[in-house]
Image (tube, rainbow, N blue to C red; front, top):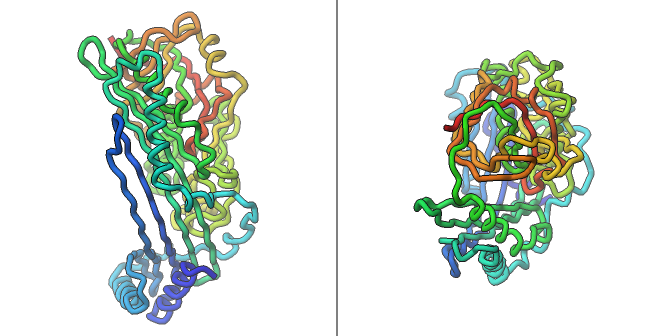
Length: 440
């Protein structure tokens, strides 16, 4: 048994001793390192190590959640005693209780490879050199003499976690993650300073892309944005780049939760088993992806992780139902929130998708805006390129796409073969027909 699991179990024992009927405890430790590099030199270097304990306490039909960073035995006992006393001052809530133990069963024994042992041997010099190579890649791009500034960086985290409950759950995990990014700024003829960025995240350092290529892409994207202008207002086809498509798909996550359903804040209420999009729209929540950034063997409540179909051929297949709001809705729990969200890819690459469209807008990013979880209405600033004769043409910005999520996914007419792998949301390029865009 690990030290953290021992801390969690000791906290549970104390809670029962002090009068709690049930309790859960999460103990964690994390180390994070970041190197920031700007225009040829280190801009910042940070390292932080944190540890803590969070508890959920069930006392005489009442509930509270508390946390502390002081794990000394004498401090822990005082903390638990005070927390139990606090819980007794609260109103009763009949829906608050630990998950049924059967929900803990069936945990996968797969090795998800979430921990990279090389984390411990990654030196400060290696991190700095990686950031330096990112900048060198940006400076090697064609036209790089027009760059005003290049900012790059690397980061890593190593975390350990243990959870225990008074009704039989025990679980531990150890994870690493690594990140790299580059941002390039250039100067336009009118004095504006277009900028763009690239980033990548992975569980294992060896899975990150080569830094030179990543930096070069950031510079090329920024340089390509020079001369951008508003385009004409129209109802047109949008080709949404894979990394930008995460913003569109992410707008569905809030309305899919049991909390939103119970509080009548979801435009997807009463849509289970009904079409919410076109036949090409299939989304799976997959917590068991090897080296996935959202992968897990159990969720935050201890429920055994299982693949969950969210949308199948355009039909809504599941909600995210946690234990508490599931009881309120009288719905069986699924899982409290997303792990790896995978939108099923198609068979055509970006060039083929552009060629099929002939005329439209290629969206490379969203700037501000919002999507209303209750109504489904959205309004998003967009930047990217006009598409003419099946190819990228002049850059555009300061335009706005608007509509309603109820209709948007029904307009999905093509899906790319290029899922974005540097995120827990693995979205390919998406093509939507007949979207309203405001510009000139």
